[in-house]
Image 1 (cartoon, one colour):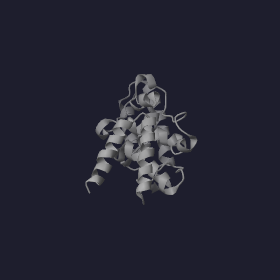
Image 2 (cartoon, rainbow, N blue to C red):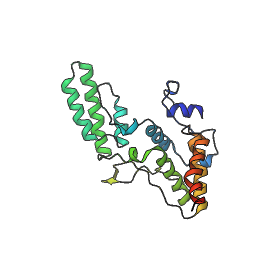
Image 3 (cartoon, one colour):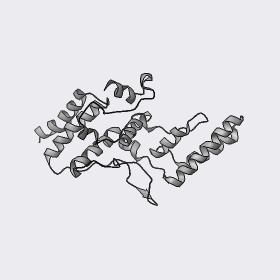
Image 4 (tube, rainbow, N blue to C red):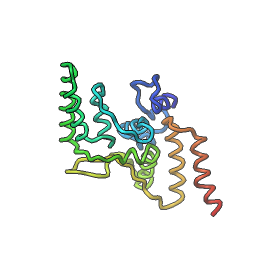
Length: 211
């Protein structure tokens, strides 16, 4: 859990490490969040505060640019335009070659997954994404293979990443959700049990007791 917490806050001690649930819970629960889902959670945790814009600079690794596009923080069109601006200003052969290679990946990305200028994931946020995966499992009784990443499609390719909360049909299901949500956010080092339980007590049970 300590390692996960370091990954979430991008601590220097966690460089090169990824979120993992291995050894923290039974396999039936680990399967609720696939490796791809954990990568999304990690990316959401590292989004700039306030949903700040993504900046593509000469020194930006192309992997970060493609990740920003996949997360809806940037578009392929914006990246291609910025790439042209950077190439025009480049003064060294190495820089020009790096940007030329970037452009190759961007063109391949456009062909594989046309992306619109959406920021759904950034707007829904980390906690809502985790809640969406859990509610889907509870309501459908199975693990979502795509971890609720895709909600819009263009030519049969995913064009945005968004989490959708499934509505509960009983308070029993909602209670199960609160239990599982607490287990996952604490295991991933995102929050403490004290904070989560206090929120549920204030937002849910306090409201019920005053109805």
